[in-house]
Amino acid sequence: MAITQQSVFITLADQQTLHLRRISSDKPNGAVAFFMHGAVENGKIFYTHSNKGLAPFLAEQGFVCYVADLRGRGESKPVIDKHARYGQTEAILEDIPAFIDKIEQLEGKKPDYWLAHSWGGVLMNSAFARFPNYINDVKACAYFGTKRSLFNNHPKKLLQANFIWYFMAPLMAKKHGYLPARRLKWGSDDETQKSHWQSMQWAKKTPWIDSDDNFDYAKAVAQLTLPPTLHIAGAKDKALAQPIDIQKFMEESGPGVQKMQIYGRRYGHKIDYDHINMLTHPHARNEQFKDVLNWFATAPKA
Image 1 (cartoon, rainbow, N blue to C red):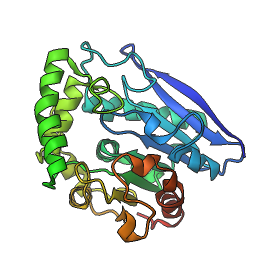
Image 2: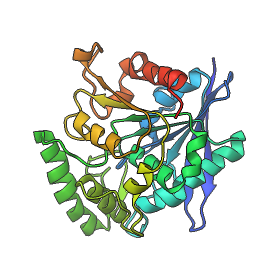
Image 3: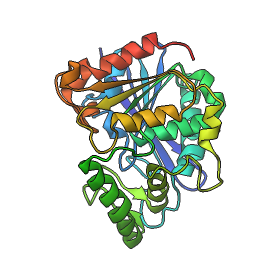
Image 4: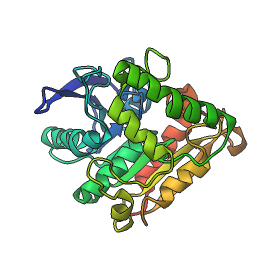
């Protein structure tokens, strides 16, 4: 089976260009999947140009996959610098709708399945809160290591969140006008000062409310039934998405069907997965990737 990749670009009104990576096979089955990366990342967490990763895996099964790069990240242009003023509010209100509209334009329908890593799942559920009309088009979701607020108190969390994300990162963002996370080796891409500040507030267990217009996401999703969602946790993910952190996000994401599975040796898996290699390790193909495929095939109706 031949897997092909191509780039799709979307022009926004403010001279920004968004990038989608379309990954598909020569035997599509009609299913369309939309992927969203997390903070200090880009879409490459889901694929390589040599067709490794979750998106090529699903393409092998007949899915047409669209992997997003949020504004300024990955192959979206221009790259983030000190002049970038946008944040996660723009990602929710502008970027995600632009991605969905482009996918619908190209495929004749909105994506059937939404997948995310880390903060990308928070952005996706926030988009459902803002645009409830999306929900009826989505059959199921799968989120890898997604949490909103951090409740665990592991020493690694105290280092990576409390010291780096809450203390050092604001200093670096103020100094440079943006967070140069890639240069600092804190992630694979940079963040705007606004995006970092907004995500930091939510991670600190503050209410799930937008700092731009006070939209109450928690109140909105409590009145909705979001698509059935599989939450994947890594046994070695001690700092950024422990089961307690994921569980709290599940609880505030409304009455929809949600399931969490933990991946590690004690649960019968090949290795103890962490926050990144839950998507990049070769063993993931035969463990969590196959479970995602099964979830999409069998997830209960919302």
